[in-house]
Structure formats: structure tokens, C-alpha cells
Image 1 (cartoon, helix red, strand yellow):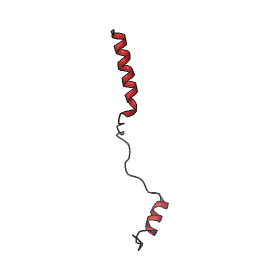
Image 2 (cartoon, helix red, strand yellow):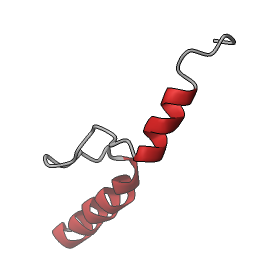
Image 3 (cartoon, rainbow, N blue to C red):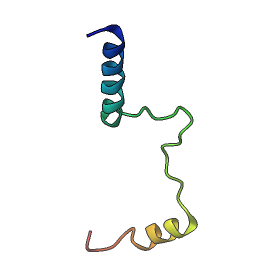
Image 4 (cartoon, rainbow, N blue to C red):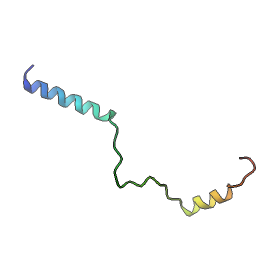
Length: 52
């Protein structure tokens, strides 16, 4: 194998493995889910139910 074929092989393997790599979350991404008014109302309705 010459250098060109080796480089092509490496590029192909890297391209193939991209789908299996873990994507790092962005630094500015918010992890806290913001509750809407409807979500808060539903939580209030079902907060102290006897079937829990």
C-alpha cells in the first residue's frame, strides 16, 4: 500500500465511525426543562392524589 491508499483507508474508517461517536453537549445548552403554565397546572392537579 502506498501513502495515498493508507490516507484513503484512514479517511474511510473515520467517516464510518462518525455515527458511533458520542456527541458532546454544547456548553450553553440548558439542561433544566422550563415548565409551561399548563405543566404547572397539571402538576398542581395531580400532586396529592390517593392512587400514588
